[in-house]
Length: 525
Image 1 (cartoon, rainbow, N blue to C red):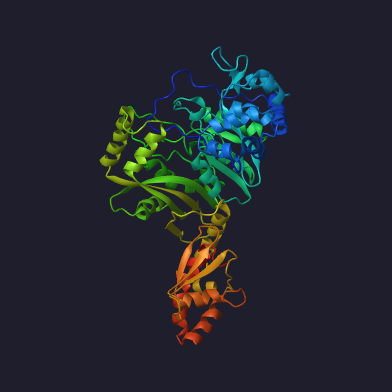
Image 2 (image 1 turned 45 degrees about the vertical axis):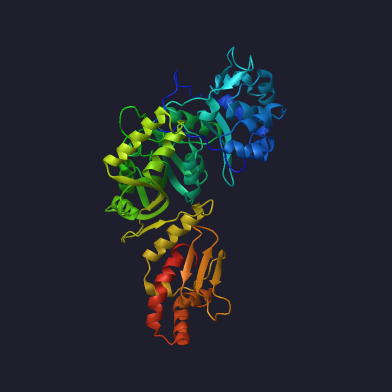
């Protein structure tokens, strides 16, 4: 738990729901929540505090959903945070005296009244103790720490999860929170809030936050999470954009149910990640409809999967979603999987071992579904949309970046939006009038044969943002090398024309595409 709460393993498609009743949701009792908040703080049940209790090795194992090292690290510890990790993260029974010491204001009875725990049964390891009914753990970003409440993960329950499962922190939610730009805004929308992860982040820079979800169960968890952290949210139940019909926002974030799951009998629908539509239709529709809910200059950030036929370029597929929506669009493809890999990943994540009858049956359902529509690959990426604040044609930038990027990416996304918008609203002459400067995180690499007078390769390497590597020719390298913020780009072109004995118009024509490319991603500022 060093930098953020370890993700839960999501229940994968095809896994049968857990038998028996769905666990209850927590209950908001204001006085008890005040007591619990004080207790959790005093117990050092924070990212730093739990990290100290677990140690690096156990914390790393917990991120991999391996619970035994964390069990061993906390079993004999007298630290209050250790008892809470055992109860709320590992799903182990904890004795009432130990909980009373860890949470003196709340006590075991308070946990029962809040719906966070139940009494351990006769067959449980600790008689007279409590078992958690949900997962409660510290979660945070670079500047904030919260407590997030969700359903217990599969590793803690030791069995399959119900389709109504409310996920805590997963890989998708951390990706979205990292990529989301965070300007100060008036109204923010978390579309498909789940347990409220993105709403927590929005609350730090939006004066009002609306959070929606189709699942009443998910909203109950989000309501409890918000109340525990003293955050006010406008929570609404409904499908996608229906709860905010006619309303507009400055920033919309969404981790929608983008997983492409067969719509056939025997394959269950998990509410938090299966939208019920065929293929990628749900996300495609969302991209087309979001513009009506963005204010001028408003931004939407969401994750998506897209289907790809043989030899189909993903830019054509996603570009079709963007046609006619009037929005600026910056789409970054982060991964592409063959359908057999994609299907196998989701079935295997459900706990089914390759070769078992259940695995083969579900694997076949996935492959048949893709084959019926001629799908060969599935792409995953981050979609950033913006409603233009002025009368102009929207800009589009669809790029493939599989390599590691900065974390968080939000600052680079915000700068990239501003830079691309500035480029769209200014002419070439205005671009050349600016005295550009090489960004501080840029280094230059020159590669050549020993003794050769000139390098064979000249390239720029970006330390932050998308961590781009841009190859330059001799003219481009000379131009960038002179960008020190003193002379305008046009003046530098004139100087290069003299040095190279090439007409200044030809130099400008060669430099402009390089200049635009470097400005949009912050290599030149």
